Image (cartoon, rainbow, N blue to C red; front, side, top):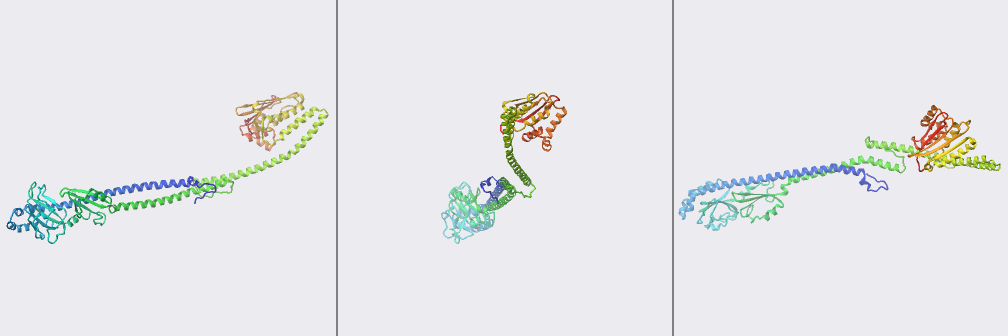
Length: 586
């Protein structure tokens, strides 16, 4: 579980590496999966839909072709009967006796042709004058006029010898007067003229049902609700599956809401065939594929989410652990340790963090010790101020005595010594203005001037720009002291010391020159080498408090680019040049 430290807003979660990793993993896993599932589902549905349409068209075409064979057989029956001389003679006869002579031959003919389509339930001959002849059923007594057959019309000029009637009952039959049938009509006569009679062959509605059954190709659902065919004639009147008036365009649109519809027109019969398939049954395979695909996709997404959470947590947990440890270190707790065992980049980070914490502990301890040492040194220095206080009082007493005895030179020297002492130990600051450092040197030179009388002179010339710049204190006096100890020969008639200072670029240069006995070339080279390479060691281990002490402090404070350089020739004196950084603040 992710936890949040006190004071860290919960909005951190949105910016956490866990959230970013989780979002990245989810996008990289679920988005391609969803796109692939959608593409597969769409392609499968489209392919299956096209297959269903193709197969339903083929089935409807097969059913129409079967009906075509049925109509062709029926036409062949009609042609055989219509062209028989006995039938023609029967229809042309005007009296009953003459027609009776042809009855036996006609009965034999009709019975013989019936075998072509044995599913017919009766044939009827009707003449232009209206008399009827029945075969295969019992004609109801009293039917003598075709006007009692409203679905039949042979008074108009015909353009085609064949016709399929609408669905009607058999009111002319004795036993099956309420039975619904459709009839094949073969007009007997020449095309373009009024027919001389007609042959009517009746078929049960079940004939159409048998011809058009099994229209539903997916499963064992053959009821009229799930699938079937609606047959309409030229006027739109429904012939099949039951007479229900006109099948209008509005009926088609209403039916199309829940059904898949295919329409075909048959020229031979003049019928329109509308095959209908219940979409919920027709598209069951598509719905099945859709359910399977969606199930697989949902399960895969759940797995991807779980794996993404697992991976994100596995990656982010050590990082979050490192973050919490870093926050503890930031609050000052260095007693922490990363304990991860991974050998990857995060493990390397943890190892580096442990090294960093140990270094920080060492540095903090070092700083702590240095602060303690500095604190103790300040206390010691403050305590040591007590001794100079007694020294100042003593020098003041000597000065008073010198003035009483009119020893002005002694009094003046004591004053210079007191000022020099106050400048040297009167402050704990490491950095002082160059002007203050030069003032202390001036007091020191004045003391030596009284000592050497007229044999010593000094000259100080400084660029005013450097007077207010800062440097470390007590770096000029040790060099001038070396001049009196090692440079100026006591046997010399006079001694000169020059102090020059100038500013160049961002560096301050101070040069101290004397006219003493000088140094040999080898001695100068050795001295410069020691200053450059061994100054700190010589000042620390061998107590060299002159040039080496100054060089060491300059290098420690300002770096190796700064320090002292010595130039000299035998009998020409010594020149010491100090290079210091330009520092406008301490």
